[in-house]
Length: 144
Image (cartoon, rainbow, N blue to C red):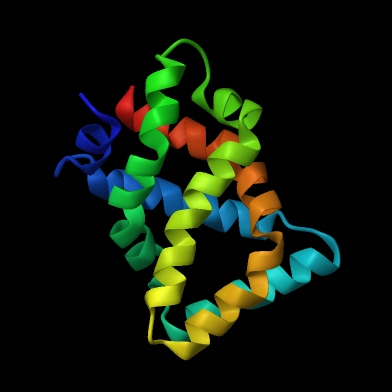
């Protein structure tokens, strides 16, 4: 079974989305310093525009995220901790996931969302890499 088949199954997808939104919320909450203030502010601004944006966007992008993670999942082979595996290939995994969000951001006609995304994009790779252990745990829980 592919990662997409596992994560997108009708009986699994809502829990996957909820858990991934939990990862996003925890990552944002844990940010520190001036960069953390910017991230928290950007996330708050996005949620003002649409309070359910994290859930809606995660659900919409989940098929693309699953496809982007599939080669890593196949290479991982189920042995050990997928979050640690992803962290070990951090740059490569972050680039694959950011290609998904970059395409979506470029295609949106909602200017406040586009501005907020573009404002946060500079540090996005580092933030995605920091989230990989949590992301991997969620994927492994639902696909393993």
